[in-house]
Image (cartoon, rainbow, N blue to C red):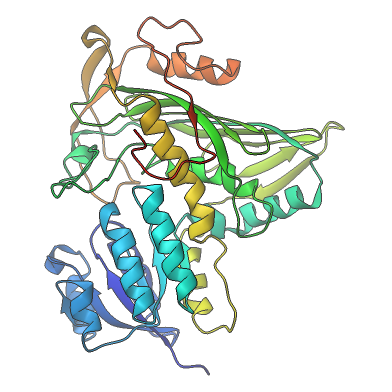
Length: 413
């Protein structure tokens, strides 16, 4: 039996705690050994006592860990501005990396990390869990085989209400920059629904581990919450091959709905109605093909990364170059409408929200802001393939079209 892979867990709150609990459930299988945990306040982790009982040492910073220790795999669940810095450090110290999404806050940081990866003999996986699922891999294989013919238009509608607890869970939620001035660009496009934007580029990639690249983007960005960045976005992008991408998302909706997905091809349509509906294809002759639930095993990214540490020549299903399309598109989205538009005050009301079972931080009964008529308006835009300004909505404004073909640095202006 091969030696267990050694892991360093960077950030053990939030998503880091989810990773840690999954590991603790399989601690006796001989697959891995946790060599250390890195977190400035590790005792806030709900699994801290159990982790310490296993003799796992804790460190304030990743450099402190590497001073006297090594790890086969660094699992990064740290704040977005730390991703590039920690990724390049881990690579330089001989670790493979599993970095939580997104890869970084800006495209220039992703490209720095790609350069560091190429200079090493290690790889970086980025934790977009749909990309590691059999459902998405099977769909992508069919797209690559030509089963569907040429892609025409992809679109996604996702309404996911978030409460005050979501925006106060850390010191960078909803902000463009963190306290040190580093770019975060936290938003639905960068965080909660980043998976869904990434997936549209990912399944269009010409190879298993690649994504299609966005060539241009225009966006309309709005907010109901008292945050620096936006909580609602309507986006139209085009890939270098000319496929239209329509992406409409909000945290200020009444209803929890989505992702509602429609991928249109010459010879079929791929659909998804919710996280629990799975992906399926419908063909012109009336037949249907089911691909299953992309979220069936959200920890597949972790187990595949651990296994990949011990396989000669292994490469992640989703690495930095595949993840770069989401970052590039997101940077263009921010530049398309740098001045976020507030919804009219008369449209916004406060309601009491219940517990959201998908949040790592539980905030039962906390207040959230809802925009009157927004759910219906965004759903109508999705069905009509329009942005809100094109639908004539009185609160809407058009963004600037941003060319991404030679886009090098955020901000570009």
